[in-house]
Amino acid sequence: MESMIPFIRGFLQIVQVISSFVLIILVLIHSPKGEGIGGIGSAAQIFASQKGAEAALNKITAYTAGTFYVISFVLGHYFGFQ
Image 1: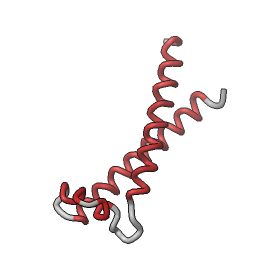
Image 2: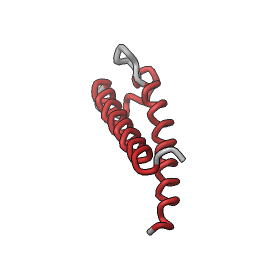
Image 3: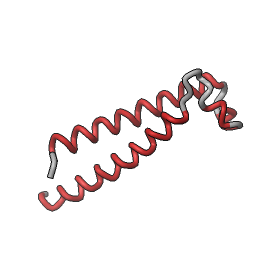
């Protein structure tokens, strides 16, 4: 089991970096006036309406932020600074 710890730590660090980049992109897509995904062009046609697109974008952003938060907590609590 001790040999798995570096693998688990490395995996969590990779997932944290990926989730941070995805979170940055998602936040940049958001618009303060609710025009975020609609300004991309035909990307809003994937969803039923622009409100549906914003709702889906909000959910994806929330899940990504939650993933980033939990992984940051686990890495900080169990692995600490080394």
